[in-house]
Length: 62
Image 1: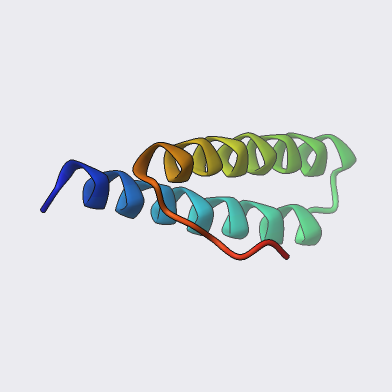
Image 2 (image 1 turned 90 degrees about the vertical axis):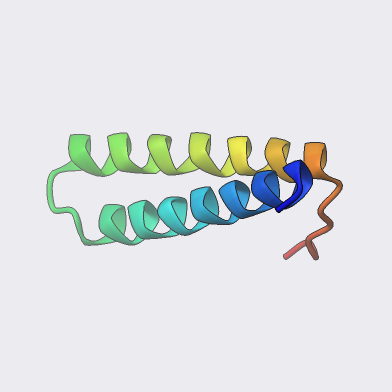
């Protein structure tokens, strides 16, 4: 696999993890825990976008 392909795969994994964290945050009953999960999810999403940009991957904007 090429470096770009590996980077793209890593970015996809990060997006999936961010999605799961966001879902966990929605279910969290403790406001502090919810905030921590949301922050972690946001950071992961930002990192995945940076990796996507580095690999030349294009993703449709939501």
